[in-house]
Length: 390
Image (cartoon, rainbow, N blue to C red; front, top):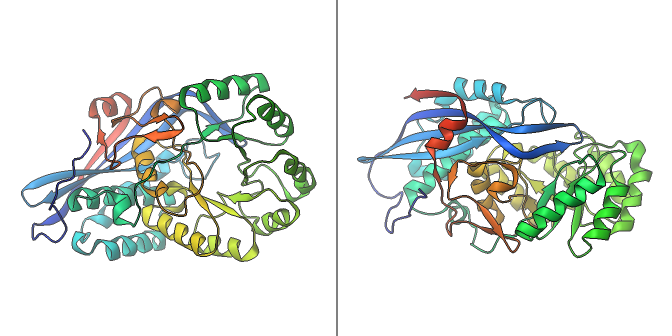
């Protein structure tokens, strides 16, 4: 069941706080429909659950994080198997974590994991579990600890590449009817852009529309991409290749539609360089891409200080990662609907309790964004498990 925060329970107490174990669960959850982008597709969701076992005085607390790379290496070079190996190899990195000085501890841990070469997915799994543990010990939601203030969270519908525009319209219509999402994002690629956009605007003219190319185009396609200015899109997400920040700057200079960067900004250095070049007007922050909540908050603050609005994207993750993402959504520079959708949107089942829902375009979840884990479901979808004691 979800955690219930207790008044007066806090870090200042003299009770011992120590991580005494770490459990890993690799699960595969069937999806309600395939998730297809320009570089590949999946039908099953792989996720690695990171469970921390924390001694808190006479109590044992359990905290949860998620590492969520896609299978198949089509989105990134990391896979569930490679991230599992990282988590096993570097599990001991958190055993001496100092909960009494947790802000400095998380920052130092994030820096150490980067220096050791851990992928962003492995870092996200470890670090989000730590934040969950900090939240449970401190008795406060993560969003409050990092400076957020609860407000209603708008949710946007994301739809992958379809076999036909008829299928696209059918899928979008079905999900809009069930959740009345605040905007729609469709995936595009060469040969699947102008026509589906026209059909979307014809059938759903009252819903804001954005498109996501996942690096599908090259600089040679800039003249073609300029045609997208005719459609009044909210943004064009990651049109060019990941490494081509200069190309994005050239494209943004030629079009009025805001470019949103995703894959291109996977570190603070890349983000700051993109801002310097003028390569984007919006940034998508994904916990899995940047490597945790701490660095996601840094992304948020850098963008805010440079007048660039952000929004919180997903891989998509299962409920654990989605709940953590929601804690970022209430930060003041998050100006667009999140990609966190209902648990039932992508998965035949989810492993958290309660499930995430979307009603009238807003995320419907616990007031403090707390959650529990249903271990019967975890067992149902589990591929492998490893228990590590410190």
